[in-house]
Amino acid sequence: MERDLDAGRRVSESASEYSELALPNDANGLGNLLGGKIMHLVDLAGAIAAIKHCRNVVVTASVDHMDFLHPVRIGQLVRLRSSVNRAFRTSLEVGVKVWVDDLISGSQRHVSSAFLTFVSIDAEGRGVPVPPVIPETEDEKRRYEEAGARRAYRLSQRPR
Ligand SMILES: CC(C)(COP(=O)(O)OP(=O)(O)OC[C@H]1O[C@@H](n2cnc3c(N)ncnc32)[C@H](O)[C@@H]1OP(=O)(O)O)[C@@H](O)C(=O)NCCC(=O)NCCS
Image (cartoon, rainbow, N blue to C red):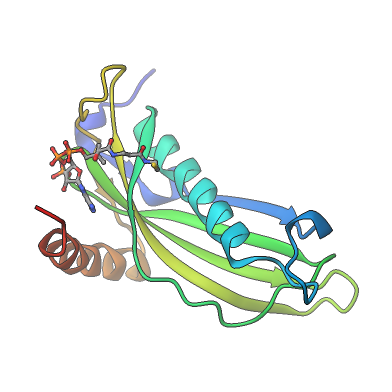
């Protein structure tokens, strides 16, 4: 039986993992993965968690600042974990953390992190209310609180 969505969905219900092997087609001249390819994967991984939370179509409204901490070499595995930090009215913030796994040595490194805002829309492109998020763990509760401050900053920077 469908649960009452007004009560919200747990973070764990939509938390997702997405992986892709770094291939030569997406390399720069040095043989490392292009930053733009990682941004594309971040958008996809974020959208998966957002869609699972809303059970509806979403569009990307914004992506916060991103740093790239380590290069990804061709042949390594890019692994992305995404989870919904907080839902607002029609929008929600998703956090995505990117790791690179070297399949030969077994090493794992944190490459980048990003916060994305998705908006749930209908067929006419109008915003659709999203179910609230139920944070359960200490980390989820911290991210929930921090997402509120980030939203205020983000909207203050929005072009008029
Ligand atoms: C994102 C989009 C739906 C917002 O539409 P809008 O008419 O400006 O909507 P509103 O002002 O009513 O805002 C709707 C929600 O989006 C949020 N939002 C809008 N712009 C935002 C931004 N730049 N950053 C964060 N949130 C944003 C608002 O806070 C609001 O959230 P809430 O309902 O939870 O309070 C619209 O701009 C759009 O469709 N953009 C293109 C999206 C797209 O195609 N993305 C793929 C890459 S091109």
